[in-house]
Image (tube, rainbow, N blue to C red; front, side, top):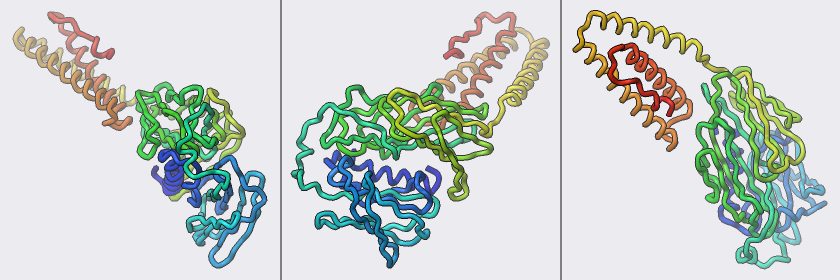
Amino acid sequence: MSTRALLALVCGLLAAAAVGQAQMPDARQMSGIPRPVDDLPPGAVSVRLIRGDLSNNIVNHPVELHVGGRVQTVNTDEGGRAQFEGMTPGTPLKAVAVVDGERLESQEFPAPDREGIRLLLVATDPNKTAGDEVTAPAVAGRVTIGGDSRIVIEPDEDTVRIYYLLDIVNMAETAVTPEAPFAFDTPRGALTTSVMQGSSPLARATGTRVNVQGPFPPGITFVQTAYALPSSSGTVELAQAFPVALENLVVVVKKVGDAKLSSPLITRQQEMPVGEDIYIAGAGEGLLPAGEPVILSVTGLPHHGTAARWIALSLAATVVLIGILAARGHRGPEARAAERKRLIARREKLFQDLLRLELDQRRGRVEPSRYAARREELLMALEHVYGALESDDTSPEPANRTGLAA
């Protein structure tokens, strides 16, 4: 992403995703890795203490946070979390806990300034034998989209780029296969849909459909998808349904112009500076059931109105047609035939350019904004050529609009 905070967020999620991609049997590879988040107060650190896997919280256990040369101690709550607040930005921090004689330590990291930090400390489960989960076959089960998932929206000229950063969580100790496939279509009008680098190899995108092939290993399977929607009117609206429950809706919008975020599912939001940019962070409350759409609207986006462009192009076309008709009035049959041949050649070239553009778009070789603008130019030019051909009363070949509809 384009800012330090979003980069840190994605990097943290990618670190967690390594568990799903490597199909580890527990959450130990996530242990001690700090992840920047925006759902904690600035400068806060939340340490979750678990034994073996995410379903086994360690409650009422002391956790130490080494703050420079000082140590703060907080006991974990019913969710296994110990939260520390009021850290001075930049101060070196390290979380430590001792569980049944096993010392658990996090990576050392600087205290954040504008966001919070979440991390896991994972103790060994003495009731498990190493390698049990690796050989265990997949079973029928359920997965959810975890609470650290995000929808990120970034305006870009006449399009808006939208990212889904999804933590697909399997709380079981073995791999599970959900009853229904994990697949969804991006909203109507999406220009491109892709699964981005760093996502689980289980994820694929075909057209506008995203499919994550199970079974899902224990822990987190990270999937990051991206697509673009046109925003020539300055407003973007989307309704996205996911195939499994969403634990917590969090939406982040880069504020450009007078952008505003609204949704019946968002109960609180705030603007926050990140470097030189401003972001709108919105969140909902409670579990969103599978199949219930996330409805979002972003208004007030800067946009280039198409009216002026169409007027200018129409005036130019009128001038060209008048010139062509005036010239034809003084030309003989040979000159008119030569002009018609030139127009037909021009038409064929425009069709070839349009076909090449469509192929490049389908293969992801052209930016969505560039694709939309170039396609509009080609279609307008084709209309002008057709107008010139149809104005020739002696035309032996009727204008063919089949390609235009394509």
